[in-house]
Length: 302
Image 1 (cartoon, helix red, strand yellow):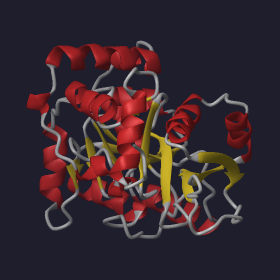
Image 2: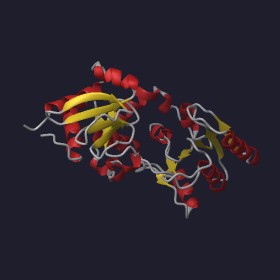
Image 3: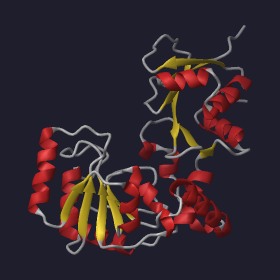
C-alpha cells in the first residue's frame, strides 16, 4: 500500500503557532489544497531535520533545505503571496516574465492602483512633488559588492553624485540593519566630502513624496515608490525590475538620464505584478492559483 506523501511547513515560532491554530489564512489555504490531494501536513521549525528523503517541504522565506522543497513568502504586502523554488526574488518566475501593458485593462488597473494607494498610504500619493533630490534607501553591507549587485552601496552613492551633478542625494540607512563602525565611518566620510549628500535614517513616505526618483540596489522602497509615481534606478537584481531602469555600468550617464525622464505605466504594472503574477489570498481564485504553483514544480496535485 502506497503511503500518502507528507509535507512539512518550516516556520518561525510565532508563525508556526498561528498555523497550528488555523489562524494564518494563506498557510491554511495551502494546507487545504495539499490535504485535498492526500498530503499529510505537519508544522515544524526551520531547524527541524527530522524527516525522510521523501518528505516535501514548504519553507517560509528561507531557502528550501531539500530538492523536494519550495519557499513561500509575502509579495511585499498582504494578501499577496508567492510559492517558488528559490528564496532569491530575482530568480522567481515573475522576474523572468515579460510585462506587456497592452494586455492589462486600463480601467481595472486604475481602480486597483487607486485602491492600494489609499489602502497603504492614505492620501500621501496624491500629494507629491519633484523637489530636486534623489532618494537612496540603503540596505546592509555598505562596503561590499554582493553577487546580485552591480557595485557596493557606497559606490552607488558616489555614482549618483557623479552622474547627476545637479540634484541633492538623500541616502537613508535601514533602521533594522546593524552597521559596523567601519561602515558608518565610511558613510560619514562620504557625507563630509560631498555637500550635496545628506545621510539620514529617514521617513520613507515624505521622501517618496518629494524625491525626483529612487536609486537603490533592490530595496522594496523602490517598489513602494511606484505607488507615488516615482521611477527607480536599480543597481541590483530583483523581481520588480520590469518598469525600473537597470544600471548600465558601462554607460551610467545614460542610465541616470533615462530614470530622470522615465514615466512607466505604474497602475498597469502593479495590477499585473500583484493581481496577475502573485497569489491574492483574498480572491476566489486563490485555491486554483495555489494548485497551479504546486503543479508548476512537479508536486503530485491532482
